[in-house]
Structure formats: C-alpha cells, structure tokens
Amino acid sequence: MAILCESDDYTCGLSEPENYIINVENIAENYAIGETFWLNSETSSLLFNSCNDNGEQELVIDNTVFIDGLFILKLNNSLTGLNADVSQDFNIIYDLGNAFNGNYCLEALEYLPELSDDNLTYKYRFGLSINSPGDYCIVNVRSSSFNLEQENNDQIFEPYNTLNNTIKFINCGDTYTRNQTQGYFFSVQ
Image 1 (tube, rainbow, N blue to C red):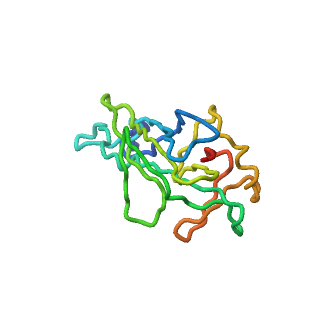
Image 2: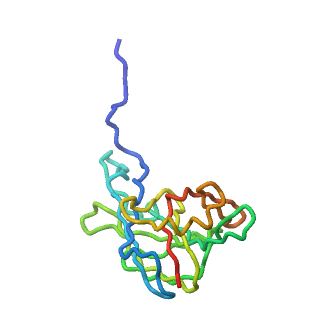
Image 3: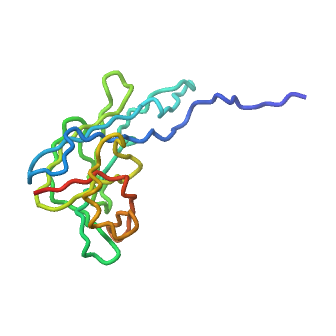
C-alpha cells in the first residue's frame, strides 16, 4: 500500500525574522541636550522565504515585514504603579531606513530597514537626540534587544527601580513592561 506524504524539506511560506540586535555606536552615560547618538542593526533577509508560482523560493522584498521600533522612555519615580513615561521630545536623523507610521495608537519610534545591495540583510541606522534633561531608557516595541556585550548604564535605573527590576509604562491605555536588562539607559543634561 502506497502512502503519499509531503516532503519534510518544504521551505515555502513566511517564517519569522531573527531579532534585531541593536548597537549603540557612541555609548555614553551622559549626553548633552540635542547631542546625537547613533543606533544601528541588521537582520538576515534569508529567513523570510516565500514561493513563486513554480514553487521556487524567492526573497520577500516588502520591508514592512521587517519593521522594528523602540519606545523612548523618560524615567519617572513619582508615578503610581509605573516608573516611566513615553517621550516624544526627540529628534531623529535617518541614515539607513526610514520612518514608518502604521496609523495606529503607538507612541513609539517605528522604522523600516533597507534591504542591502546583496539582498542578504535588512539594515537600519539612525541618529537620536533628546531635547529635554532627565534620565532615559530605550526599550524595544517588538522583540529586538540591545547588544548585551555593550554597556547599558543600568546604574541610572537604580533610583527608579521600584517595580522589581521592571520598567513599566503606559502607551495608549495599555500597560507595557520590560525587564531592566532589555533597555539602554542614559542621562541627558
């Protein structure tokens, strides 16, 4: 008796991209108001595969599939049950990639990466400058994370650590939490 089975090496269909690992190019504990620091990352474009009409793999070239984003948080220990506010008081310079606005309630910095010339990676690089003094933290919107081999200045978080090593904030009525180790901390003076 013959049994028909699908091949185990079927490779068509979208798969999740690998997480972005974010690098801070000019890490500092303190930045001046308006001083630009740079963030960059790349992720493989080859993890996203789809099939053409002939069943052959093809690269997904829609960069919205690779969207990423960050919350810029101003730390605040006078809030009840929270320890950060989402900040909108910053400027951004895009070097690779560009802004994305999904027309939904999200007070985050969202951006679309660029596909590299060799089609192997999606990359972004942008400069960020904060316009008002205070202690800040940048955390992911989705599943990206900061390079754990770089200093994240987590001692800045100590006076705000009122919620068991958790950063907690509200965006559009929803409460978000991030572990302290997931953020990049800095002060603006």
